[in-house]
Amino acid sequence: QVQLVESGGGLVQAGGSLRLSCVASGSIFSINDVDWYRQAPGKRRESVASITGGGSTNYADSVKGRFTISRDNAKNTVFLLMNNLKPEDTARYFCNAVIVTGDLHLSYSYWGQGTQVTVSS
Image 1: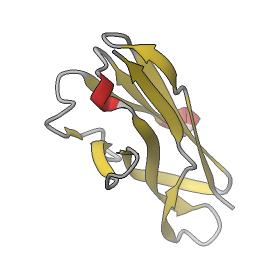
Image 2: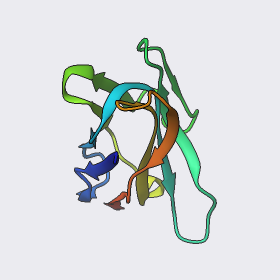
Image 3: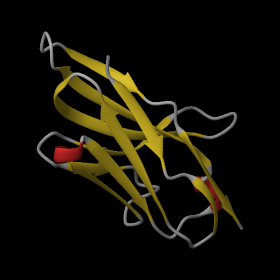
Image 4: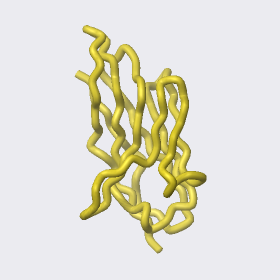
């Protein structure tokens, strides 16, 4: 069984920074693409950043230049460094990963439970 667990959220003032972590555990052969999404109350879930298995990254326009996604393959962990946070960044942040399982080498998409980020003005 594979699990994704996010952490690192919290309450921060506008202009502050947070670093989110997404740790995968279980029977894992490899982790391919990983995306960070966020969902604010009453709004649709949106992708904010993605990283491929090879390390290529992509960002939503709203976070470009402020957020940085990275990965530590040895620790099955993906990070989202968020700088210069704004009140509009307030949301629950989720990671989504395409993981090849260690037993049958099948590829599945997994979601974590999310971590709350609240930015005060």
